[in-house]
Length: 290
Length: 311
Image 1 (cartoon, rainbow over the protein chains, first blue to last red):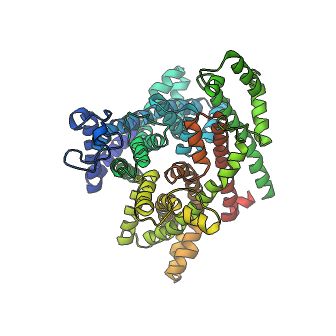
Image 2: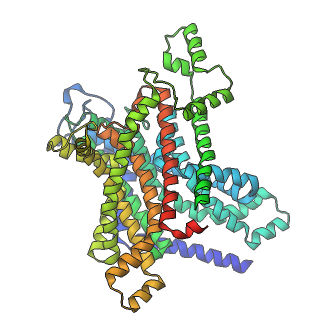
Image 3: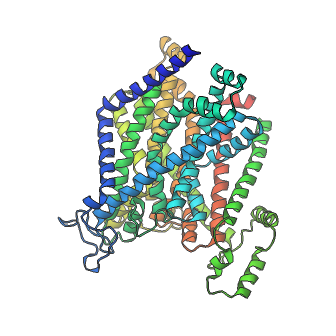
């Protein structure tokens, strides 16, 4: 048993080591990491970096073209577009981090319960997950948000539900394979109580793929929030979100195209950065497809 | 094969039932009284009571659910609460536009994506492969509604080459109206399909039978298409299914960008007006379309992979 655990631990460190080399040896992923670092700094220090208040309207300076004062011009309410894009980064980062985390928590719980207990519990949970998996995440999110409406907690809830099936499927498969391991069988036969088997033996051994999945889905969460806000069922105005800046901008596209261009470029750049890192992580884990 | 088909069709029934149950429950757990939501705060108690009676809101939940399922089966989803139009009529008017957009976008995306993927696999780790990778990275990162907005601003508003809204009348005009929206969705599709074609093809090309074909002197062209692409079709079919589902999801925002009629546009407008009957109808249609696309993909597997027919 100790031999087996040693092998597992070595594998884990090998995994982390590979990740580190993949991320730091490749110019593409270094640029991606820098973009994410800039995003984090912009989001955290938004009040210091933004030249204007993102919400205060001004009738005397509507639809201005980009200038030294307003780098991306102003919108139809006279708000500085750059400041709105800067504050919008907070939104993206918050949803990008919180939603995959919530989905991982709920999904892992469901997957572990289904995989560990099996039987009718497994059948019910698996059936529900299969049903949800048939729906693309965006469409599922749109359908739920259509019924619930927008707003902060609804968006978190909607993205979480859209992501839960993916986590549940991985957690279930992992749990089923870990449960076959001799050390779990030994623990069961020694009479260790179920909660402590799950927390001490199962969870620590299935966390690696879950954490990686969480990282891979940050970009998807940012995209989903932007899409929902664009459709008017995400972050509600006047709070700036990259999605609703594009929505407002498209309604006033004859006044100024700059809100659309600026906010869209921000989403594209950030999603690109997260995708580059995601690709590198995936390649490191499964070299056969490169 | 008939047995497989029958089983697969029967299997969709509980799925559809579950979907309807979820939609029904979601509509009922909504915060607030639907009667107040429709009639507004100014309505009198009598008006509210009459509305609840008319809409069957006083019935027990299970009876409301039976009415709801019965309504779906008999194509009766009620009428719009804002303009009184029949919801099924609204859906039938909008649905062809969405289907049309999805199909044209899929065709355009596949027509570009598959050759790009084949080129990338053929010239693995050379210039075409790197170009294809850059293309797919951009396609994965750029939100479709942003790309659509850029195309709209450039080619419709500034250059005036394309219409800025509507769905068009008659075949030629419809294709003219659909071009930019479909191109937007196709760009993202092509990136995905190209990547998938490359991966599946490379996987097949590393198999033993390909090496045998090379050893016996088969032409590279024949190896690529007869041995390679033919066997890469199965994963590609799965990818096309996922891609079609993604196109359907993307169509919602694209219909909004290009101000085009369609189920997505209908749903989003209904949300703004809190028109619950139309929202419910739109959600049901999307759910049924997802079930239909999944079914279609399973049927395509049978065509692509003869082994499934035997099972």
